[in-house]
Image 1 (cartoon, rainbow, N blue to C red):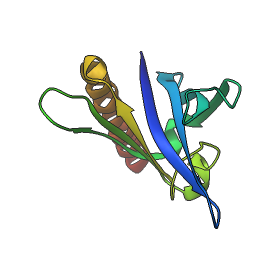
Image 2: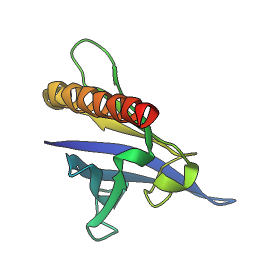
Image 3: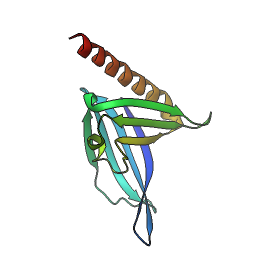
Length: 130
């Protein structure tokens, strides 16, 4: 199961503000969330190579899909247990990343977030029992 995403990020110094866009694919396999992405400038030119980043499910606090307007996509919010776990992802803020999901991928995103949350809940229950 893999879902394409994108999000914008802004970098600024004292004089200039640079807009960048990150486009990639998020997938789930073998107890890990895998982020594959590339960074683009405002003109759409690739300014980075394809990068990969994986985070183990045990390090994720929650995954939430938020709907937007009826005929548009939504946002998948991934929140880590600690700030440092998502630090390698460009544009992550305080252990959280917001991914824009297109409308055509909405069902898949809802299924992924539901599946991950169920897995994490079951894991917490198992840890409490054992």
